Image (tube, rainbow, N blue to C red; front, top):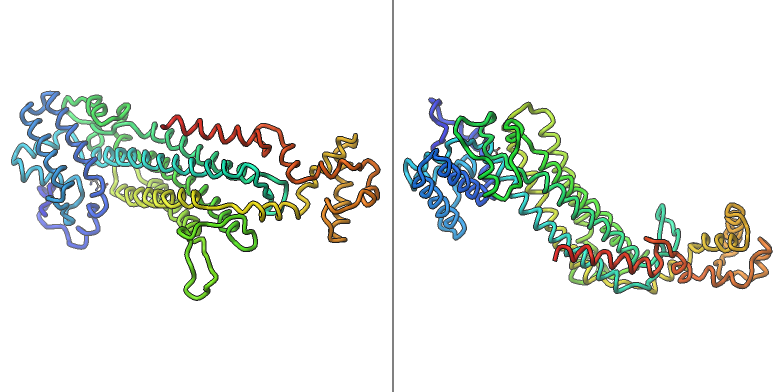
Length: 460
Ligand code: ARG
């Protein structure tokens, strides 16, 4: 394909260099954004009298034709083109003749690529937001199914205090809710049009940047042309949002993998989201969760790649920046795929409350409650803490649980122990007594799940 910039060259580009330089293999994904950007530019050129109204109409019509033809498959994107911007412009010129050559008046590929990527990411961020909302809804509905299932809560992966499964799951709703708002914040900052920055310094034509910004749904236009064409902060911000989503998904995956193991058996993943082993007939593996955990590394890598590409390049556009798209595309594809399997995996997962309760009953997770009981009897907390520590030590030695000790045995440690201690250390009571806002008590968890529903309602 002839280069549109071939004018000052006397030799053709070396074939390997041509291949190396070309980005059409991946930036073809932005053909629609590129065409829409060009249509807005053509409309503006006409409105500002830089080209005639008739020329502007013909350009827009030609671009519409190309868009339709790519969409319905009558026009294949030429993989020998340098990039999607060159491809579309050359098809337009071959279809319209000289009028097509007027499209590039007062603009550069540098502002084209920046505007295309912003529009592409804006729409993908919208889709990812929808997927996050679907996941939050799946998690919240699952939590509502198990308001009374008590499980051990952990610190250091050591049994710590009892919590409900609903409370545990809702912690993940909180994370994904933050992911949604974080994404919205980033999109707000991204929704600024660089179009009209031209190559780097603006243009001599009397263009109207507000008009193209409005036509393309941007909130405003960039205030500095050098920055307009070389800013990729929005890629970094979005990649960092995606990396955070993946980090949350990966933590959740890790829990699911543990819970699905025979060592825990707190949940049963549905057959449709697990796989078997080629040799061990008994296996039911949580592959989806493991893959999500594994793919988190890719998305972190994409963010690191982008930060590294940008760290050493002077203003304004440099070809290094062509590397932005593959990182962004890979991260978007990965996050979308992960969210797409995660929501139904949660929806179809079953909890095993008896196993959770069994685990909650060993490991002395009611020891804090026993100390609080003694505080209720007038002992200072530190004294109570020490007495309960000694009692637990005795239990470990004798192989008993706190519930199994007789009152006589308790009196060896403190005379303040009375018959009512057994109610105080009943695991379900321990949960119920955690009445603080945001705690694991039933009312607080109900309020939490209602808040998630309220959050979701804003997006209906
Ligand atoms: N394919 C290029 C990219 O993706 C488009 C911008 C090219 N601009 C330039 N001056 N070579 O970054």
